[in-house]
Image (tube, rainbow, N blue to C red):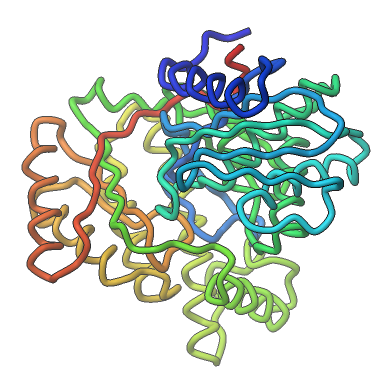
Length: 380
């Protein structure tokens, strides 16, 4: 078993204590799954395009044991517990857990009731895949308890099925794949058509660089109507172009409808930016991807219309203070931005981002330095 990430190990100790306190016994095992940053490739996943995420050193941790009934406990909100005789119709945060159990059974991996205690430090609502981390930690836990050795690519499909069909959020497969498949020190280039992937070295420190993640504290909700509307726009554009997915659209394709044409343009150009980013990183340069990140943000702001005042403020302030590149990351309409910076300039750029938010009477962003961390794993 790989050595657990140090932060995951600390979180596991908390989850273990919570489990023992709530259930009066020890868990049979503890599993961790990380949140993620998408370096580039936004809204391309459900268009069967290309993405490039990396795992964050923030984890959802599930301490679990078999049981006669379903019991879910979370440290969120000061502690909540949900008990259920079956996994049908569970709502709220526990739906992500029950949905995984349902999707596993639907996919031929039979699981029974379990007690699960959850603890997570993945920022909630920040566009960093807190829900996918919950799903993937739960999937590993139930797989371990009930003796299933599920291929990680198949596991990502099952976790997405839970979110799409049980929870009702129309997400692609990027988040679950990142949580399950990313490796430490790498960004993961993935083709969302066949889920083939390549781990690309992403060693910022070698070039004296750092990646800032800027949580704008603006709510981020994947299940809302705007996300579904963008997906519907892409499906309509694909029908008009007589292709199955916009990944297949000719690079020079245009549509008469202005809104649909801008959606098309974002997907086509974003896919190319992912390919270009992978090529630059494989050539040995991290600094060289800066302009691609910034171009991605402009496309999401203007053509896909998924940015926000908070995200634009963070990106503009970071670039104005000397960032090599910056973009929003995640589904949009709030959440987080990233900025590629010289490590020595990180404090100055962080201060500029916070000052810009204050000047515009926006929430105070939370800024932290990210590293490409370990993917989902058993802690003990």
